[in-house]
Length: 225
Image 1 (cartoon, rainbow, N blue to C red):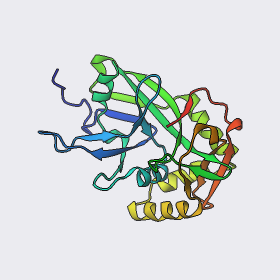
Image 2 (image 1 turned 30 degrees about the vertical axis):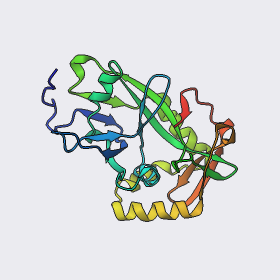
Image 3 (image 1 turned 180 degrees about the vertical axis):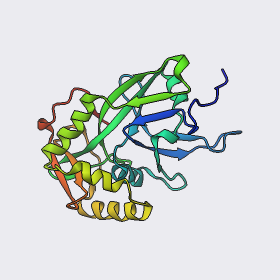
């Protein structure tokens, strides 16, 4: 069925509350030069779109996910059209909210590919056929609490203020901050689930990593990407 025009004047069919970011790579098709693929991870409910509240966190992920000839870009989630994903999943959109990264004894873990291992909270949105032109995703109270808990356990009580400031940064500042963060904690390859005993979050104000014991984060909806 041919898609109708978006209902909102912004021209987007997808909107998030609060603002969220996703990672995309261009995958042009005949007649669709701007076609992109969004970064996802598998879940029992089907593939889930990776999303980030912090542009800084998304920038770190993009640095590791990029490949020669296939750079990974960070974009506002509202600029991505998820209708193909929704159709493929029978009318639902799985959203994986980034909470932090898997770690072991103070070191970040990475897959054999070099990608970091994210700690994600899953939320699923049912989308009716009549709502495909105006898809609105609102982060639920449970996952807002998950975000707060991660940063509370890490001692980052000024997280909201740091997040607001990072929203104003341009690409050069984000590149600089990411480079500094990754100088401090090198990733470890060949991670396995048995190695994970911490979740790492980064303190934008103090310019240092904090590690939270996995046992302190009791989250039924969370999993690793």
